Amino acid sequence: MRHTDTRKLDKSQARHVWDVAEYCKRSGIHKAEEQRLIKVLGRYASSHELQMNIVRPQTRTR
Image (tube, rainbow, N blue to C red; front, side, top):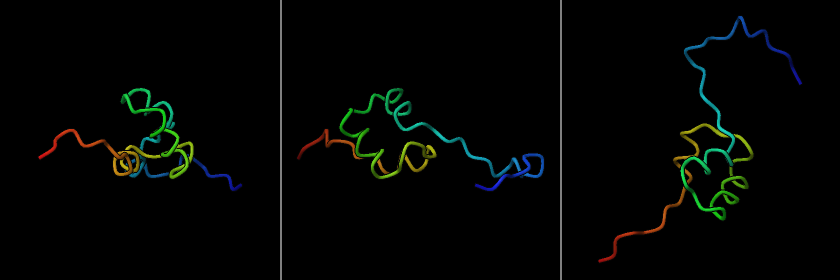
């Protein structure tokens, strides 16, 4: 593991990283979908990664 001096980091490029289980709990995502996201993304992911990988069930049929 490499140490980084946090004073030298550019804060404009910082992203909020979520615990996948916490994000799913807050968003009301089913437990099975939560487990799939953890397999795909790992324990932590950005909100954009989570939103792009969530599979929502079809609610409208023709």
